Structure formats: structure tokens, C-alpha cells
Length: 298
Length: 310
Image (cartoon, rainbow over all chains, first blue to last red; front, side, top):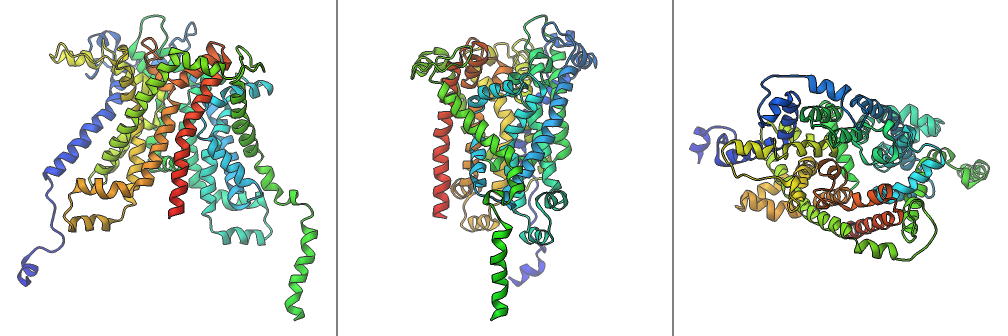
């Protein structure tokens, strides 16, 4: 025994690098990764090929001759019906929807979460419970009443109407996110501020807001990807002139008229996916945190 | 004595003067909560109730208060398209549920084996979740294109009789959607499972090793039962996603070929906004709501029951 401890190597036994279990493990992961990466790869290579090359039939092959023509066409010339102004219109519509929706929904939800965690009043929990249950109701049951409400206030078909809809449907998850965050703030801090005579808004703007910046970033990531990717509300509460990018993309790609230009379609698809992809790759761990917050809803 | 009593007397005197009306107490918070209260009451409660009430009318182009009892529901369950939609969703739902949980858990378990490049793998598995269903549907529509896509490539490799054309074959079109749906959604479940696995005590593994239980058996017998809450969360998330299934179908197949990939959410929207048969759309959406309630009640019961026991 003593011999072993003296002569044997110190520390834990090194693991074999290429054990059978490891080869199996990495093999599985690499094969599965290929399934996940394949569509992105295929979209990129297709969008860089000319139509004659696509007709040769090898979707997986890299382009023999790289061309950016499909991207230009998708952006500025692709047709939806008779309107041939490309995806750029949808892109700008989406931007115009996105910015006010994100600002408004986060502003409202953060104040809600703040009131619900630190300034509880009689009935506040009831409304919050309704809000959370509302997150599970299929949107289809609320679609038409909202049409009527938007018509009443004259925003049906307008970008402003869609902004309101996004604000309303973003509220449950965002309120939950902020409520949970503010509930974790040390109570002494809040009490000290109250003793010093600070009111509701003063505490919110001067103490809570600066503290909660990380959670604001998570909320922004959540909302930007969610609103950008929305299709259902976009298709129902807008008209062709105000279609967001996803709706216009679907109309361009699935239009039955004319010859199908697969390279242009894939360039258009990539363009639409670019915003959330950039957010995803840039935000890294925060995106995962946003997802984890979204999962709490379940 | 007087000193000790003084502050109490002071505060009792001050209280009624400070708070004249209960309604105005905490006023800022109440004012700030108005948007939430309006949303909860008018949109969520009001909107849902409105739809349920009007599902008992024969509204067509515009909502009318002409009540016809359960007529719309009878008609709904006699419509082939609705029955097909339900069957399609059931098939998709069961497969999606089983496969998402299985794949999500296996991937999470693989990533939890202290491997190298964990971040890279996680990034790869999760990125499709950032993309919209429309983008997902269109990308897979192109890959599954029989003329130029996967099928033609495999044939090009020399397997001339290879046939895989789900988007044009009514029998397997739902699996074409499933491939795309899994690609988009499994990353999320993997992430949740991974978080659950990370929460499990290292000592469990040590104990299992001491007892000589194999890795796979430890997962099945020890770890999975311990992760019950995580599985329930994942289950609820997947289920609510399945019921919402709409964008993917519109983008990838638009319900075709024929009616073979129709789903309930699409039925509702077609009847409300295209066929101008509002009553039918309301009845169908109320059925969707019922299905959610059926899923949610056992879950709420489990959650509630779990807390009681703990």
C-alpha cells in the first residue's frame, strides 16, 4: 500500500482520450451537429449560386461560381404579386414595428413587474395570475375581439395597431421576468429609499432601473427575436402595404406566379433570418438566460 | 411609561390623517398597473369570453347575436377538414413530444459529460431556435424539394430508386413538417434539460459509481426521476408549442398536398378571415382553448400537489 502511494503518480488517474465511450459521444454530437448545420449551409450555398447551377441538382455542393445577384434581387427586386420592390419594404416595416414594440412593451412590463414585487396592492396578484394564465390561452381565441378593438380605436391595419398587439402579448412573460428580478432585490435597499422619502417613480428611475440593466438586456433579446419572428399577428393585423418581413418573405417564396428562383428565395430567407441570428450569436449566454426566463412560464 | 407610549399614540393619531382613502393608498402603483389591468381584463378575460359567447351564434361575415346553440360545434365535428386537422395535429403532437423530449435529453446528457467544445455544440444546437418558423419552413421546403434537394442528391450518388418526398406525399407530409419542427425546437428543450442536469448533485454520481451502476442505467433509474419538474416544464412548453402550430405549416406546405397537412390553428384563421364564417372559426378556436385547458388542469394539479407534498 505504502509503495503504491509513493511510486504511483500523484493526482487522479488521467482519462484515456480515445476511449470507446468518448468516440461514441463525440461521434453522436458531430452527426447531430450536421443535421442542425445543414439547413444553414444549404441556404448559404444556394443563395450564392446562379439558377443554371442549381438546376444541375447538387444542393450540398459549394457554388462553382459565386454570385451575389440573388441577394441584390431578393432585397430590391423580388415580387409579391405585382409589386416588385423586394424584401426591403418588409424589412423597414419590421423595423418600424420592432422599435416601438420593444420599447413600449419593456417599459410597461418593467413598471408592472416593479409594482407587483415592491408595491403590492389589493388585487394586484389576481391581475398577475390572470396575465400568466393568459399566456397559455391560444391566440386564436383572442384574435377577432382584438380586430374589433383595433377597429374601434382606428388602428386596424396600421403599424401602430400591431405595436399594441405585440405589447399586449409580450406582457405576461416580460412582467414575470421583471417581477422575479425585482423580488430578488434586497428589501433593505427599498426600505432605505422609502425612509429617505423617495416615491414610486423616483425609486424606479433612480435605484431600480440602473440595477436592472442586465435583465433589460435579456428582455430586449427576448422581444427583438420574438417580434421579428412573428408571423401570425403580422398577417392578421396589417395590410399588404404594412406587411412585416416574415409575411412578405412567405408571399415572395410561396407565390405561384412565375418561375421559381430558388437562389433568390434562399437569399430572401437568409435576409429575414439575419437579424435574430446576429442577435443570437452576439448575445451568447444572455440569449440562453432569456430562454430560461421564458421557460419559467411553463 | 409615558415615553414608551408616546410614539404609539403619535402614530395612531397620524395614521388616519395620512391615509384618508383606501383607494388612494399606493396610488402610483395602481396608476402604473393600468395597462396590465386593462390587458388582463379586456383582452385576456374579455376577449376569450367574447369568442366563446359568439361561438354559439351563426355569425358569418360580421359577428351577430343570433344564438343557435351548439350548431357550430355540430357542424365543426362533421367537417372533414377539421377532423383531418385534429388527426394531423395528434400525429405531429405525439411524435414531436416523444422525439423532442428524447433528443433534448440525450443531447443535454451528452453535453453534460464534461466534454470539450461544449459551448460550440450548444450554440449549434440552439441557433435554429432564434429563427422564425417561416424561415425554418422555407429552408426545409427547399432541402426536401424532390427535384433539386436531398432526394436528387442521394440519387446522384448512385441510389437511383431513393425516394424521400414528404412534402408531396399525403401519407408522410406530417413527418416532413416534423423534421423541420424538431430542427427548430429541440435546442430549447436541450437547454432546459441541461440546466436541470447541472442542478443535480455530483454526489449522486459518486454514489452510483460506488454501487457499480452503469452510466446509462444511472440516467434512466436515478437522474430522470429526479428531474421530474424539469420534464414537466419541458412537456408544458412543447405542448403549448404544438397547439400553436401554424406558421410552419403555412410556410412549408400551406396545408397541402390537398388537405393532408392542415392543422386546427390554420382552420380557425381560414374560417375567420378567408371563408368569412366567423361562427365556425369561433367554435374551432373554443375547441382549441378546451384542449389547452385539458392539458393545463393536470399540470396545475401536479404543480399544486407537488408543493403540498414538499
